[in-house]
Picture 1 (cartoon, rainbow, N blue to C red):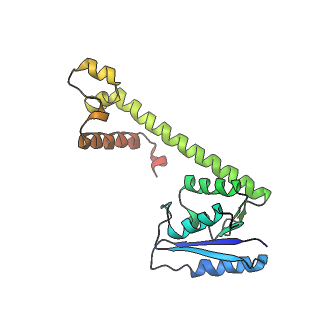
Picture 2 (cartoon, rainbow, N blue to C red):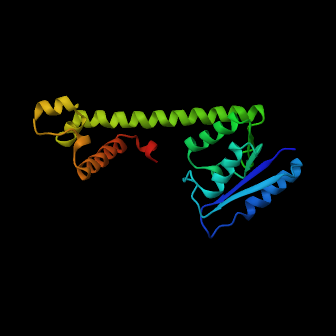
Picture 3 (cartoon, rainbow, N blue to C red):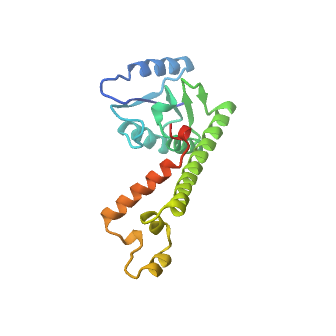
Length: 198
């Protein structure tokens, strides 16, 4: 008999998990699963990786007290692709099935395993694009910037050569460093294509 963990989540306290609960219970009943534990979070954003209900579920998964995890939709588990991939990787390592009703994904099937591979690839692509946007922003700042942009993109030796009193950004006072980091982020964002920023 499989031990099933159903995870339910809503983002605000004005919402209810009852619709999800009804769907999950009906699915488990149809599969003949009686050993079912429900884990829920109410008023908790899916962008947060640490949530009381989710933490209890993951603790039981790691303790091998759960064989199948069922959610009403992917975004109930998490809105971050990276976080979702990390969860799925842990489930796969522990031989725990993951089922999402809305997307009709079951990692216990060949198709579900293929979808996991695609999600992992998207996550890797997302990380690569972020790194490339940061590098592109720094290159643009180095090429076009004068003052803070040119100084901050130089190496410590270049800065010290140009001025004996100039300090590398990591040693700057905290407020100045924070301000310059925000400016670099602004350069990175402005270097992205309009469609990508949307």
